[in-house]
Image (cartoon, rainbow, N blue to C red; front, side, top):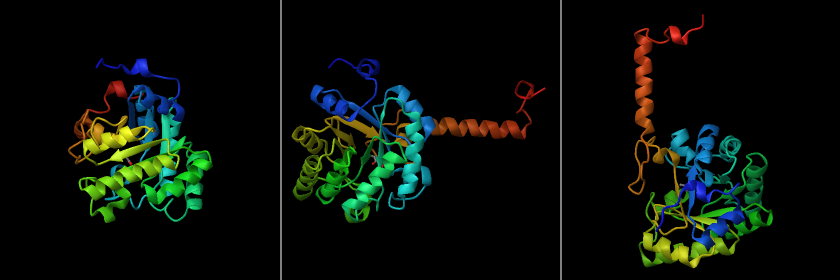
Length: 275
Ligand code: KIV
């Protein structure tokens, strides 16, 4: 396979129909989480196709153990920051726990807030058959929806932890049925999280919409990582994560040097003082 340079695949603005074309042409999709203006601009300029304002912000920004306490207001706030930094990437707001499960009307109201207040171009929500009616209603409101099946962190208590899904026949069938339900409800793409690579390949082959994998092997139509894992800012990362940089160590060393220079009156020196 010949290698792809990012410049050669760049279109002006990444759109929902553009992502469908990518799948038809066999061109892979890159997605990263982002939570603020600075990283949104960096990732956008680097050519990342989709910026997901994930409810993982609970874990990596707020320091809580699960994504369950994250509120709609909080994700919308971060979506607004990310939307300001993205000129090319598609910005997707992640609907937090409680913002779409009660009824389809609630789901539509929450999704509209992501577009109106957050500047998102699409929303993502977790689940399959159980959320199909919510997806249908949001799509009717002209808001594109990305699904998310397999390991769904908002179902942490049902799953008994963040466990790989699809390893038994029953669970495998559930993943296949959920992915199909999400597509039939009108989703434009679906995240496949935490499942054997062969199952993700089977789902990807069976769907006409793009699949975006995380811990789901190489055969998905695209890949997503949490930015803190990619950049080496997390204390712990799952085994499927590839760390592309070690910004945690760089930041720690910079802070330590600053503290030492302050203690030793080396900073600010003449070059960094007003006259
Ligand atoms: O919240 C999130 O960051 C996500 C990705 C892991 C897909 O849902």
